[in-house]
Amino acid sequence: MKITDEIRISDNGFVFNSKTGDSFNINPTGLELTKLIALDSDFDDIKEIFLEKYDLDDLTFENDFYEFCALLKHNQITVQEDPLDFK
Image (cartoon, rainbow, N blue to C red):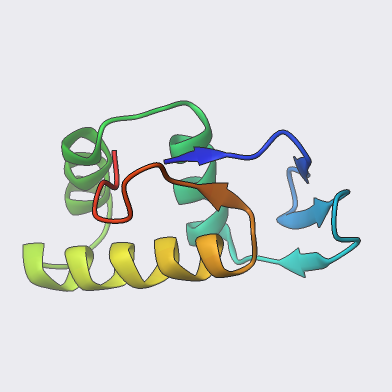
């Protein structure tokens, strides 16, 4: 999974898609996750970071991660060659 070239993300969580003209605001946690995805961070590394930083369990993180990734994909912020591959 990678952030498309048309996406611009500000440090305050404003996301702009120059291809579609759509814009979004994401909260600080979503911004942190999006930045890690943009850096091509491995799923296991992202999971480790979030489990150490926030008070949540594995299942909660995985559910929230996959739901957030589905929203990113739906809004054309990310692309995936394999829809089941969230790396």
